[in-house]
Image 1: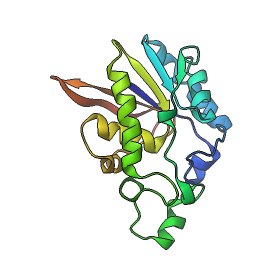
Image 2: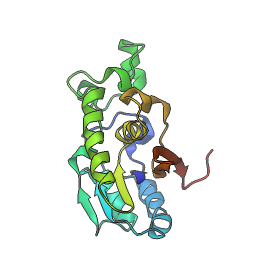
Image 3: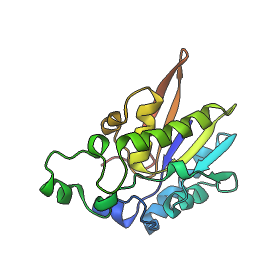
Image 4: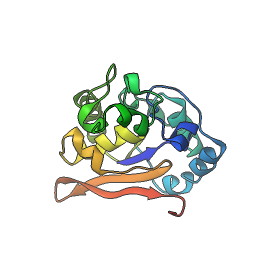
Amino acid sequence: MVLVRHGETEWSLSGQHTGRTDIPLTAHGEEVARRLAPPLAARRFRRVLCSPLQRARRTCALAGLDGQAEIEPDLLEWDYGAYEGRTPAEIRAERPDWLVFRDGCPGGESPDAVAARVDRVIERARAVDGPVALFAHGHVLRVLGARWIGLPPTGGAHFLLDTSTLTVLSWYRGQPAIRCWNAPLEPLV
């Protein structure tokens, strides 16, 4: 299974939590998302699932897979509730030890609710005989990666995920494994 985090947005640049706010990619985000096409074209996906939010749908289109894409509501980003649009620094000014993967968000989703959604996506993807691509968002994909290998949703805190990156989930001797995580299309600075 290949996970693709959407391209850069104004809020991903500023560090604001972007859950259900439906904002577009930046021009740079679109440019980098186009670079996803060659590595993804090397594989024939049996199923492509995409978050309904425009930043994921546009990334999928620029990567050349929108013709195959099925909208999957369970791939929506975390519902940040009262923390939507706020930066981690702003939140930690009120709650110094806050961690989304452990604490969830007031008026939004709990870690267990996000885990339940990604568990359904994993079950659906595992039922496909062949490669699957998922286009979604940072925090939900981090929880998905944790759940893939049997960790609780808090495990998502241990997986950093940049915009316009590729992740490959696979198997090792019958056990779910991470083959590649957060592979960049641009050089790391």
